[in-house]
Length: 419
Image 1: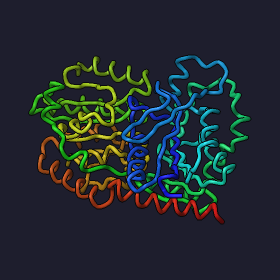
Image 2: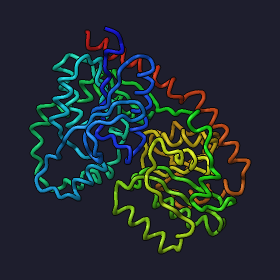
Image 3: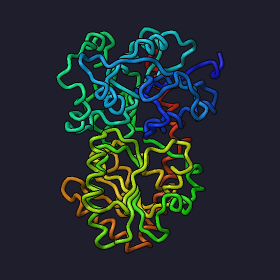
């Protein structure tokens, strides 16, 4: 049997072009490279936030299945909130498809909980290897973030627990043939928490060629941003974890020193109440002409690249961040980065070399504003940080390099199940 007859089944919780994020980018890019070398990657996921049951995205087939959240008393608002973030779903039809799909080489879970348990159980019943990627943090996830994700189901009776037990949802990581951590800090903790050594640190990547030809001037003209404005960009979900409120507070301070500064926020609104708070702040501080919030851009929208070229500095002020793929995208456009000194960002960014750090808990808006003001006043520093970031991408973070390392992980997983 040739490799083109063998499928690699990627299983994320959701995969919707209109609700794109870093996990979707990772899955699509590694799938493309697997396809190029002869494997047959497919994406099996839920219908969450998507209408089509079958679709091809970026040349990769996507199959979606019906699902439910097994909690009594969920409102439509609760279900939408869980679709947006952290929903612990069940999909019996997806599990059946995992069991039926012929000629599977390996299952790759990009999710834990019950859906991860479905991957685990199908793999064990079929005697196939499975690997798990930790994209959003697991061991390195603040308790406050877990609480926010659990809010929609709080106080609801969970009738899915017996299914979770049957599927071994609590043993997804322990039984995996390999566990992949995209962040260094997650990897360091996982090594001490898991009872096996089948763990690898594999950072995300980026396609430098895709980001090479953006038109920043066209983006500014389209969004009516003055050509000489000092533009600050944040590309991420509108979500408390991403901490745009702190960025808004810092930007309000920055405007006192740089009245021509402009802030662009681009991302899907995973927490509508948080998004309302941001808009309320913008109104209260009279920042309506200096701040713009755009919905998430599709992965193939040229404006995603154009926005990166349009900005003067990219900011990622997250409360926690396992990796931060958008940092790589900014570097590809030779843009300086200001980032929280948290999680995987601590090993991704080198302070004063490829970017500037600030502490979101102790320094807060004042420290971030000072960093932005420093870069506004020193264009040569912006250029140096951006150039160093660009060089860093070429050395360590191309998708081809990531795909090669992933193939060695797959081979180790296949060897593990043969033992």
